[in-house]
Image (cartoon, rainbow over all chains, first blue to last red; front, side, top):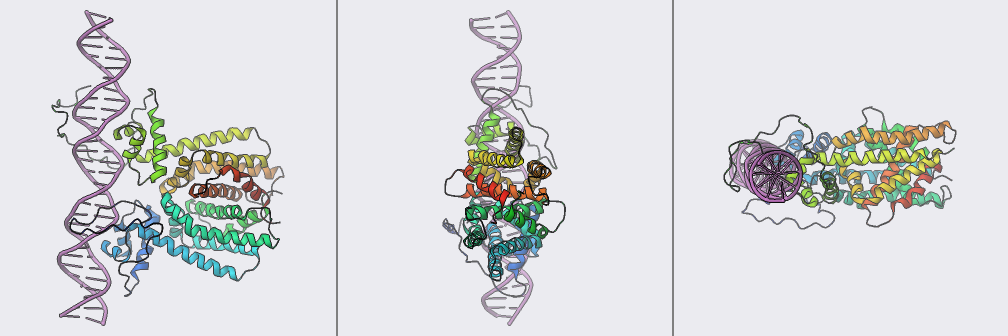
Length: 227
Length: 227
DNA sequence: ACGAACTGAATGACCGTTCATTCAGATCTA
DNA sequence: TAGATCTGAATGAACGGTCATTCAGTTCGT
């Protein structure tokens, strides 16, 4: 398990349920009883969790709150998710999978590395700007422990940064971008800018469209601030 | 000691005094007794808290862990800090105050806006690179809840970003930097880059000097990646 | 009727916080 | 200077409330 939020005791004395082994690295995907009856509860609960975590914060939110928001009983949550941590992890996993998938697909239609960078920025801001609760969970709640960050950083973020780096490296090969720059560092700078703008947008009281800023960020990244 | 209640006989037996109910609502009176005797406990505990929070994460760390690391009893922590939250706030407050103070002072000796940006990057990386535990608390633990983030964002970060923005705006006025750019957005991009590089450094298994990257970041920010 | 899905009260470990008590040193008194 | 007295920092066991998790029982779908 990635994070240990609030360690819970072992079940009742009777059953000696073996605590799942360390789960070195990534957790097992197997879930309890997914079912498939009407009104997909899985997605419903995940959506409710996103809202509740965004509202109260992961640690302060109770599983009972999530259940209430989803209109189910507390126990039902455990029919679909292994633990509270699993809720957070699932939000993260699902969103990243979609984002990377969608990003890869969108990039296929664009050839020019410069245009690709612009498209990445647009997609990034669109995705976050579309769903504020999800953005809060991503920008804030997901970063609550080094253990989780480690995981985040070594899997999905690594892949995301890799995509950006490859675009930049490709641009260098084609002679469009400065060859003397380290593409890995450049990718971090670009991502850092996107990330910071997103965090600022979330925490800001002002309401503006996040996508408005995409062009400016790309402009600065491409041409710099110097005259 | 002034007489409080009836004298107690045995030193070990359980107490028989009714406890005061948890102060409902918001309290936050004021800190107890700061004291000033030798061996500043305040700083000692704060240092221990930084280490323990970095190691286990704020929510998973127990106050007792912090006390143990500081070599004091659990109760002693409450002689110096109002609550567990107060520990985190204090780490944040003290560090930001020092950083902003030091940053302002360092900038006074530099006139050129471009050189100033370089100096900001250097100082930023130096500060974080010097103390990994502190960096972890800053990059990860402090951002775990919107409550802290809100506070973080609306006070110290705002000021920090303001310093960067002013340097950029000054550069624009002097005709050194592109006037058509929004200095606020540019400041966020710059800070975002510094922040991302720092987070990456913390989470990376590789050990490298963070300050090594300062020049590259500034180069990209100033000149862009385009040829 | 049967299993699957769902419910929600009950369980019990966990941990922030309190405060009666101790005691090393400071201050006072003769 | 020695003893008596005082002081308040430090201690740490115990309290009290919180919540993740479970599971025996109920409801639903077919």
